[in-house]
Length: 104
Image 1 (spheres, rainbow, N blue to C red):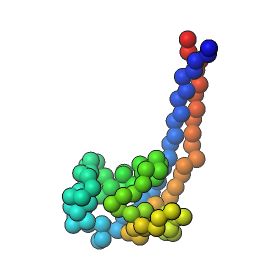
Image 2 (cartoon, rainbow, N blue to C red; image 1 turned 30 degrees about the horizontal axis):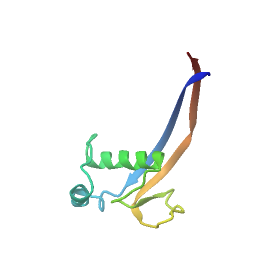
Image 3 (cartoon, helix red, strand yellow; image 1 turned 45 degrees about the horizontal axis):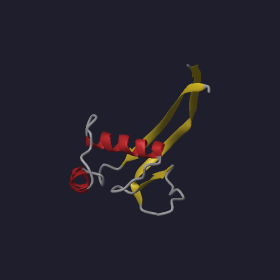
Image 4 (cartoon, rainbow, N blue to C red; image 1 turned 90 degrees about the vertical axis):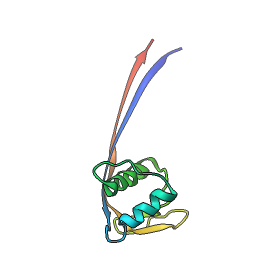
């Protein structure tokens, strides 16, 4: 039997716009009260942007914040809980590196 170690590396880049007049401290307090505490990067808004990017990359979902717009438009989600105050304005999901090494 042959055995392989396979490393798949994906790099996905997103530009995420968040209307901080609507997605403000009050929104963030409510989100953290009912959903989860955000891991702070620079601040809670940057943490939310990171979570939106991670959820887009992993197709995890957007419970508690709604699905963001993509290029200013709704995507074809099975459920249309859309948050029009969050927009993924630039999407680059085209890079993948695959390395295979036979191991003993």
